[in-house]
Image (cartoon, rainbow, N blue to C red; front, side, top):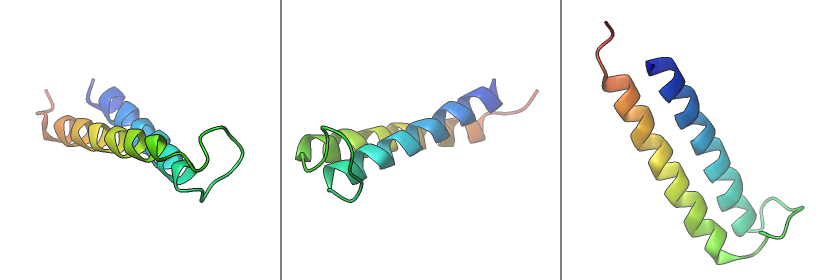
Length: 62
């Protein structure tokens, strides 16, 4: 379970980074480019992923 949570957390962090960078117009190629809404959504996704990763790492292994 800990491994699955870690994988999901890392994927959330990567997705959030992509969304935030597209919102900042650093990455192109989609409708999200240059829209500040996607910066916010990306940063929130990164925060959720980081929290989930922290939780997964703090769990005791059985």
